[in-house]
Length: 491
Image (cartoon, rainbow, N blue to C red; front, side, top):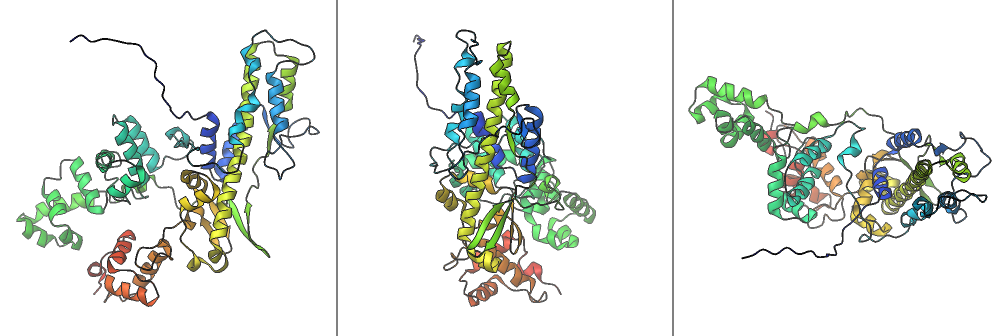
């Protein structure tokens, strides 16, 4: 059979993210201190940018704020760049058919100026690339994504692996089931299983395990010790190992005592918390990004923008364009710098408006917490807030990432206010975080000689008006890494 080659046209649709949107995604995830560092870096790299009050010509107006209470618009800034793009003034003619002179740079940004409703289908969010984090200490997520980028996995496995990595806690353990990850990421369970196996081969060894036993098994497998005495102890006699009864292990395995001692020493030398080496030091400076201030009319959101440079365009470069640059390269460079400067100023303002909208929603939905404290926290989902302010859930997630709010009851991470409802027949009105706190408090106050069973804890919660089943209590206890009743007993 002869093979025939043909030429043809094909129409396809694909998402192309502009540089402006990529920058906005990056800025949105930064807290105040990180944003300040980013602005300082831009000031060093872009001569067109300057800080209001420091540059020459203070009598000239700064870049107008397009969101300023209906009085100011972005027209002056747009006009500057548009006039600059039109070529030299005062009768000086530019070169004919110069493509640089036909560009309306001011029109580049109109799509991203509207702070109002943007439907989730119209908003395209790109996950920050690994390069985004190079200026910061490498986190566990960064390290794993870098290894994933070097793998030869297919697209479906890569997408599932990103979802797996996104569901790891600071210790490196997987906090969601395969089914939950597949459902949330919109991929098949087979892809998640394949991705999980791939991630478990990454450094640090033991990462993406679902419990300590699996973490140890992964590390033993890496050194071909999972089939020996150590592997047999972990797979068949884990409970005996936890008790530290070496004599019982030797008897169960029918092995000499010194063989068992060597195997146990090997197991104890493994790392049960592989992700901790990439965790940020807990003793770090936290500066609130937002204040929730009480007023006679309720609570008000005030963004903490002290020490953030107030940017504007340096008009000296516009004058250079008006006089007419000697070469197209010089004019092109100056226009690019104006392009980048306006893009940064507008994206900073868009970031400000998004964070304010999210915080306004938090204040509206959490009046009990702000007035009375943690016990009055109510369930609140990121998806609900995203629908209210008209953005994609990932936008809200980035807006609250690594940011803190100063409240009447202390400083809290913005993510703290987002918690799903507790499981159980009547537990939907209580945030999951509060239910887990109650379980922990009950266990902390128990008699170590007579620890409470999950059934008893369930009964105590029911006496508080919280109808939660024994199985749900057991799940919360496991999430809190609290041992079972038998293991908590102290003689």
